[in-house]
Amino acid sequence: MSDTEESKATLDPMSARPLYVQLADVIAAKIESGELAPDRPIPSENHLADEYGVARLTARRAAQELRERGLIITVRGKGSFVVEQPPRDAP
Image 1 (tube, rainbow, N blue to C red):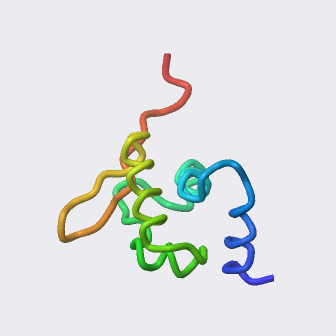
Image 2 (cartoon, rainbow, N blue to C red):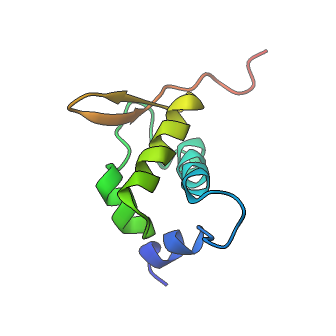
């Protein structure tokens, strides 16, 4: 199975959870694992929509969800970037 097929398999359109929340969770997991590094861009809304087989609006709502969680910032004209996270074991 290719990475794209695996990625699509992580979203369940029949779930009660909205697709944009599922997509935000997938991206959040990639940020937490280090696959998406701090101060580096996340894929564009168009790329996420194509990769996960969702509408562009769904990808946009996922990015909004990630901003609300404090995981990314969006810079007009440049894209969305992973926020530097503080160490988890800090008191």
